[in-house]
Image (cartoon, rainbow, N blue to C red; front, side):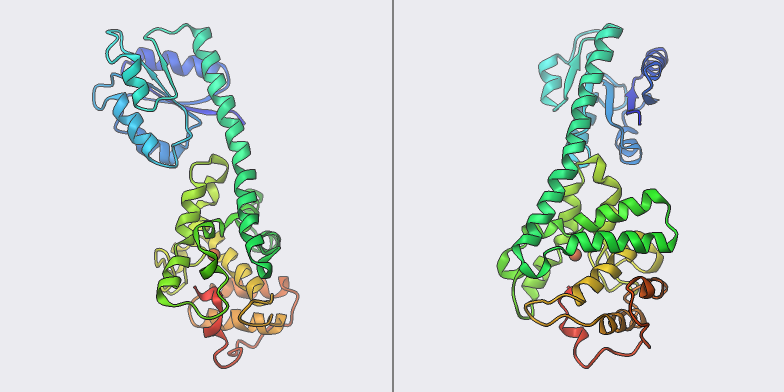
Length: 332
Ligand SMILES: [Fe+2]
């Protein structure tokens, strides 16, 4: 897949020249005149590189560059600033804006393409490594707790199966698999005293563990290969009735993939031993999912689709047992 480049140049002729040059090399190029639009466009397009004039008339390229780099999502996106013809601001000022490269006002075509290619290769390498690093971090969190070993692998497989059953396209099924692996990576900042606590959590501990979806989103947000799973990471503890966290989203406002992931996540948590209880049987676990669907927490339609995937007898939807649901750690 070709890289995408956002060109920001005030002069129409310059803008068109850059666009033609980059597109002649197969890059997907979007060219705009306004610095003001860069932040919004970057959030939407997620370009692999930004090539921008420093002396834009509305907002200076320096200021845009600083703002881009302040956002964790853009931290690793290379930004090239091109000096104005007057040479002001100079290269040292431009580098102070955290630009990845600073060019003189009239770079040759050969030099420009070579430097663009080098930055894109570096970016591509970082993106490739990112997934491996975050996966390894996610596995290290599992290793902290003997009870959750293998949880992410199982979730990834189960989410993939449920995604297929729901009829999601292949790309989204792959996103679900990846999200299954990394959805709890934010627990890296939860101390062992909370993560491994055998008894119920107090309000302070609950607040700590409830930060993990947002922390996970923050950890994964700089890496382009993980960006499409950010909504799943952030929203995998929302509830259909709005009583979940971190944003209290309701119903269809919760991304479908997050609703799928939470069902397989809860099912796996229920069917494995925990320090504070023994594993539920498949039948008990499914009964709990139906119960939580009826309480307005889970997407009941997805629970119904999941039941045969879980390869267990369908529940009648009855309460799994007095007090059992309230004692489940997955509620936090
Ligand atoms: Fe979680």
